[in-house]
Length: 204
Length: 251
Ligand SMILES: [Fe+3]
Image 1: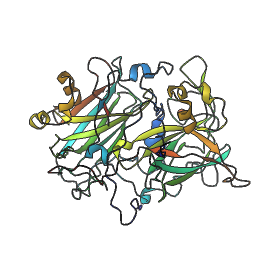
Image 2 (image 1 turned 135 degrees about the vertical axis):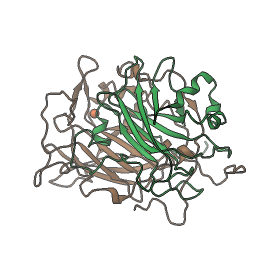
Image 3 (image 1 turned 45 degrees about the vertical axis):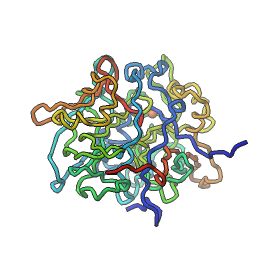
């Protein structure tokens, strides 16, 4: 018999449930005094380099109703296209930008707002540049395993057209599900869990 | 700051092992009714990890408050403590290669000893405990070990079937070193007969995977006359070694 690989199995996922905010954004859930702030609440400071942007997100179920109990995390490069992470080996990212944000969707409107900067471009595995994007992760009651997707920018047509990940999407009609449209000073990004406009989710 | 990297070794930057989607629950699980309208129906687009998924933020121990890992007192009035069976939950964060993962942010939340959450949308008639908030967090040490103190949560009824109850459980959010490792799960308690009746537990197909989420009572680690101990190891996705990885130009 051959040798054993001695691999463990990843812990199986379970839904975050309806009370995910108690654990991850307790101040938002009116549990004050335990942590000074909700983690991931502030992404930028006065010293952060780059263009300030506002992004409004919602998560919408198969009946067209925005989720009022979802939690969204985003992860993005800094303005120069570097990640503030030890695994980033191309250079030092802006120390005044964490690149990571976490928001609960509003309990009435289902909306959440990220105040951040526009990310720079980062390379795909073969060295070609990807278009500016956020990596997005969504959990909620009824979602058994966190959903990974991306958000691109509607005013980056040229970069989006050559993005190697968007190019992997076989049905081009689905590409716009990953592109936030600019409306005035704000980008708007609706994540559709189901239906004709179902957002492209990734197995990464 | 936490020492998340062994000395003389650069931070790991390999791609993650592919997720075993048969081990995880599928998105669409009609027995758990809320999943019906919240489950994507199209195939996920498979993508080798890029730098956007391989990287992730890190959290230093300096962000932790002194009581963050102690839910018995972190919401309690001075000198008071939460009601319920006192327990410690300890274990290691490992990856699929069996290696301890240091510097992992572990955030937990749970109901009180009566099975009631401190939340405005919670309607179960069990009383709130004025000294129990229900959230805690810690960061794994150099060998991946972590520990926190809490009270054992109670089971609670929930609107799904006409008479569905959750087994006692603690919710875990685990933040490894790459955004692609992000994981939320739940810990159950050894010997609880409610585990095998729960529609949320039953979203997982493989009984061995359910056992993996069941913490073991450890009477050796108990603090005599104070608290019992439950051991709960967490496994994150492994990552490939970058040693012999093809590197193309411009990368
Ligand atoms: Fe729960």
